[in-house]
Amino acid sequence: MTDYKTPDNKIPLFLPHSSASTDLNKTGSWRYVRPLYDEKTSACSAACPVGEDIARIEMLVSQQLIPQAWETILKENPFPAVCGRVCFHNCEGACIRSQMDDAVAIHHLERFVGDTAISSEQTPKIKALPDNGKKVAIAGSGPAGLGAAYFLTRLGYGCEVFEAQSEPGGILRWGIPTYRLPQEVLEKEINRIEKLGVTIHCRTPVTTEMLETFKTQYDAVFIGCGYGRTIDLKIKGAQKAINGLQFLYNIRAEHDVEVKTKGTAAVIGGGNTAIDVARTLVRLGGDPIIVYRRRRQDMPAFDPEVQMALNEGVKLKELLTPIRIEGAGSASEDHPAPYVMTLQKMKVSATEIKGRARVVPDGDKTEKLQVDHIFTAIGAEPTESWHHVPTAEHPSLTLSHCKLIDADIPIAYGGDLTNRVKSVADVSGLS
Ligand SMILES: Cc1cc2nc3c(=O)[nH]c(=O)nc-3n(C[C@H](O)[C@H](O)[C@H](O)COP(=O)(O)OP(=O)(O)OC[C@H]3O[C@@H](n4cnc5c(N)ncnc54)[C@H](O)[C@@H]3O)c2cc1C
Ligand code: SF4
Image (cartoon, protein in one colour):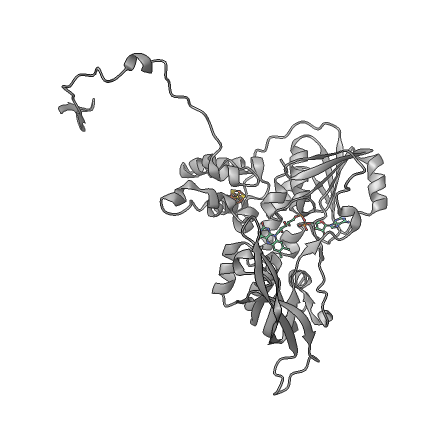
């Protein structure tokens, strides 16, 4: 060992000194081998549906360059504060730090950056191309419609959004409860999109006639009308059940829902709506039981949301599906709850490729469940038939997050209408 010092003479450096032959090292051949520096997409960015440059965002935050971190997010995602709260953070599932201890809390970081920008009233320097004179009509102001408006405006298109409801936001406003996504946060992020020059016409449902007119007034149309109609439960007594999505809508619209929330409630389904209905009922003093036809691990709802629901006291009954609802709606001593559900027991018959169970009835085994209320949340579909992407009649192009068809003018379909994964980040980053 030779004892060297750093130039300022402070830190001793111990360099290993070999007295053996270096013949073994074939340096002659090494000189042709040089390290190749290649910039790769990090695992977290690859897993993020909007493709945020997460490593750069983390680096900027670590240097306290919050406005720069915010603008980096805004390059790919118009909703940092929204996604920081409700995105299912696939990024964290892919984070390689979890091989050592835990994933980096990327969504918390995103929320912090988004909230800081909102509270300090920052105005982003978002680069936009000059106006190209072309106009796009957008049907629906959910994350898909607003995401389309945001990116198209930055590309120089003039965008007008037409929304059937009284306020913009789609499921972000009417479905996701405020304890998960406060209204002010959503409104601030929508205002920023409007400030780019996007006009939103509320209470203006697009019809097929309007669509024909759009073809003469605009250069392209984007349809992002979402999955607004819930699938009906088709069993005897189904009319006694309350539509879960409508229930969430009524709460956001501040309609009187108090009467529907006290006592026990069965929530039928295993997706986002079922979880949000159950967690909302807990907050309103109810005692919800989720009834799901498959197993917990097969639920389409995001697993941490399911866990939070269970932690909050929501009960879960797996491998059961309702086949009959009875009850007059009045309680008695023999029959303490107004409704009796007959539940068919199910069993796993096979496992699908991604590990999801395929289930079949377990013979004629049934059980009864008495509850005060029943909510359904068994899936949704487009509200009107023309919201569906036309299949064969026009040439079409499938992009990562939307489908483009050539019909007089280009018509793009996006959001829940085209995405296999129904999530905010999946639909708002249309790149
Ligand atoms: C209860 C619930 C909770 C959820 N929670 C989460 C979550 O935590 N995280 C997550 O990532 N995803 C969540 N999702 C999924 C996510 O909300 C959706 O994937 C996303 O909102 C779809 O966006 P979209 O723009 O396609 O449709 P939507 O958000 O449904 O918006 C469609 C808009 O189009 C409007 N519209 C419909 N027809 C017309 C018409 N003819 N003319 C004009 N406007 C029209 C509607 O009024 C609506 O405003 C949840 C979904 C639900 C139902
Ligand atoms: S949008 Fe979602 S997946 Fe992407 S960085 Fe944010 S939390 Fe992660």
